[in-house]
Amino acid sequence: MCGIAGIYAPSSPESRVDRVEKMTRKLAPRGPDGAGVVNRNCVTLGHRRLKIIDLSDNAQQPMTDPFLKLDIVFNGCIYNYKSLRRELEANSYRFFSDSDTEVVLKAYHAWGTDCVKHFNGMFAFAVHEWQTGRLVLGRDRLGIKPLYVAESNDQIAFASTLPALLQSGVADTGIDPIALNYYMSFHAVVPAPFTILKGIRKLPPATVRVYEKDGSHRSESYWQLEVGGAVEELGLDVVEWQERLLDALRLAVRRRMVADVPVGVLLSGGLDSSLIVGLLAEQGQDRLNTFSIGFEDAGGEKGNEFMYSDIVANHFNTDHHQIRVPTETVLGTLPDTFQAMSEPMVSHDNIGFYLLSREVSRHLKVVQSGQGADEVFGGYHWYPPLLESNHAAEDYSRLFMDLDYADYTRAVTEDYAQSDLARSFVNQRFETPSGTSPVDKALHLDTTVMLVDDPVKRVDNMTMAFGLEARVPFLDHELVELAGRIPAKLKFRGDGKWILKEVARSVIPEEVIDRPKGYFPVPALKYLDGPYLAMVRDTLDGFRCVNRGIFRRGYISELLEQPSQHITPLGGSKLWQVALLELWLEAQGL
Image (cartoon, rainbow, N blue to C red; front, side, top):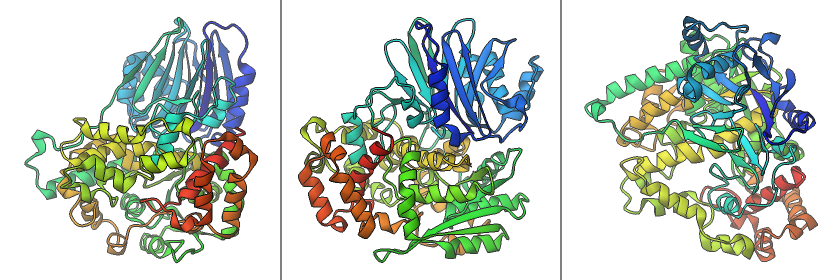
């Protein structure tokens, strides 16, 4: 896990080293163990390193192979790199390191852009071909590792984070009206390629993009998730599905133990993280380091789930760390949390993951985390109503989206109220052939879009703010493919994730399987009051926010007058949603 950056300027001879070094300095928290820049022909590549696999200097980046005439910067982990290395060695490739980075480099030389189809892992990379001057960018199937791109007339800049890319000086930093509509309506989910800034885009998941020296470029999507039963599996009974699922889960968590440093688990006390702990214990991991976090209660809402995480920690005899965060600590940490966000994210979980990551990074460099299970196996409350829905897109929007278009036009000024793009996007996704039933279509949308640009992005941003690598076994692409083929009726017996819960009964205590669903709650950010409300009021009444002219002043006043009366369908604060965008823009110096 690292941070990558670069500038590609085939028609411009001036040096770009200073600008790329400035970008990599911004990426320093992602890679505190090393730094490097290489400038060759029309490409300047930069890297910050977090040492996880091959701790020697042989794995330093940017990595250059003078024999193959290739340069690479790579962020992520290829879990099957050892088997790929053996395959490449059998084809006469010779290695100078024990890293997965070099495997990616050799794999690109051997298979070209098809190399990505061989990888099991999370990754974002840039490869430069000396002889052609070509630059190739790639991103993993489920977008676990980020890659931001800014293009101007004569140069392309890229980086692992949006704040780092701002240092390139390439991007238009105006607010994108399309992205703003997504942000305010689609629970702050801004699908690729958009970001909140006009001049910065995201390379979509499962995409390889090739930039040629003549200025042209092409993109290829190399993987598609199929949701709905396969014909050859229609006859499988529930026991056979459970056996296949348990085998896939075991493989997914075992793959993510590949490291030359210890690996721990972020243990929330929910089903998903508890199952990871149980599967690792089953495979012989003794005295596993586990970590839980809790906050003070507010508004009658409990701020921790320690009673459940303690059950799992005691049952499996883990080396457990319980982190209690007082309210005043949350308030003082918020500015740093905004700085760590590549894009504005409204979820209260951000502060939880930020503070949890700060503590965990004092003990470990790698953890496994339970993100993705709810989207893949159907754990959210908006899925069951869609099972028999005759108006699936409408019902999904009503249950998930924060604002309808009427509310959106009341919130933003005329320049930004162009059209209901977010709702149109949802309608289009429900009209595609992806999935046979309404609930399958919702699972497909959430797994390939919402998951990428909310939970997964949140975990990457907050963990990497402290040089902590988070691995997500529920997003092993082979496990996701299997889950997509499991019939919906096996996911939605009871209150969701039925088949995952049944599989878990042979692994973890019943008490954490049949409990109410929870998350990393930070009640003080939902029920804004006292110093939190004062901070928000000062921000929204400040000259920067007023001069920016995004929101109607009447709407802001309405929210400030009675914050607790303006809650989204997902239980978030509409006031926090508005304030978070302004706080993020100011934190990035915009």
